[in-house]
Length: 90
Image (cartoon, rainbow, N blue to C red; front, side):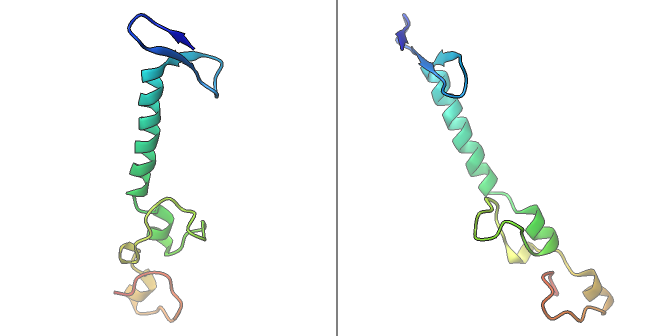
């Protein structure tokens, strides 16, 4: 670590062989956290379209809202006989 005249320190980045100012490292950390939080506020595209998500056991970072699932096209035609249909019949 090296102190610079304004009080900032140079910090080693473990992922790179470069050094960056400490305040830049903090900004990048905040950016990473904010982007992860923003991802949790979005709906899962797979769950919304197909009624199921391949990432089971709660590992999907997106929202699974059963009210936002696509409408079954066979139901609209009156021909959906599947009792376990994952799409909306409302």
